[in-house]
Amino acid sequence: MDIVCMHPQDFESLIEVDKICFERKSSRSMRNLQLLTFNDLEGCFVAKKGDDIIGYVFSKTFGKESYIGPIGVLPEYRKYGIGKKLLDAAVLHLKAKGCSVIGLEVLPEKCDNIGFYYRLGFKTVYPTLMLEASRNSQYIDIPGVKTINLSLLSQTEQDFVVNKIRECTLTQLNGVDYSNDIRTTVGEKGNVVVALENDNPIGFFAYCELCFPYVWGAVGRHKYRNDIIRKAIFELACLNPKKELLLGINTVYNDVVNVLIDSGYRIKKSINRMLLNDGEYPGYLHKNDYFVVLRAWYS
Image 1 (cartoon, rainbow, N blue to C red):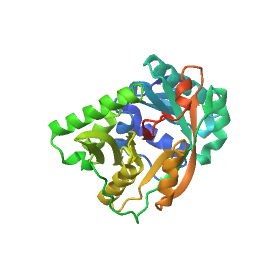
Image 2: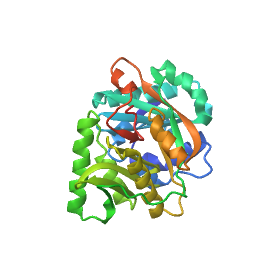
Image 3: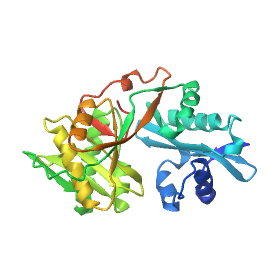
Image 4: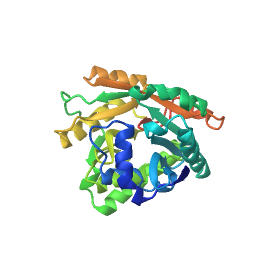
């Protein structure tokens, strides 16, 4: 059995292996795998027995922040240490890239894997609540703040806004960079709603079912922060009227969670969040008072 770098020619076999590993009713699409590995293929690995793929791991980077997953091993090859070898390969790669945060999430139905990750040096941190956006929300007018749909701007205007967001997150989130995923969302006909104050971005929220099936984004410190979050998600819901919009929010942002639940958002499930704990990132176990981030491990 060998652990080797993933290649595009592996995708067809991976679709079937992934469906078996997660007992999915429907398979991932080829395009989904292409987007899952976009700009990060060198951090994705497969376990091979001969020419057959028996396991895999994906990893994703946002500048200095990263996460691992999904990871899967065919049932008949479990308990042989293959998962550990795959995870070790991903961690080694992410550390070599200079990532200062390495996280992963464990779905409720896979909670028996938590002990496995503990043994490999991960520890549990604040869990993520998966919320369903309220369909009864109404338009919110926020003094001095306007929102734009990034897709409607010219390429030059898009680049300007995305670079402004990148500059802000690199500074305020210690090297985190969402620019590639924002551009990919727009390129795949998804939606990115950007909140502006004095024409400067103060937050963004994105949704593209093909890229990442949840609403994600970030908003900086602002007296109307919670209203900005609700306004942006309301606009994404209007742009995707037939979709069930889900968003994952870290429970470290308890005040935001309370506001969303009071606004009619429903809790769908709670997801275990874990962080590699090897003494390198103690600052990432505490709330960041400047940004509220939906998706990442920065908390």
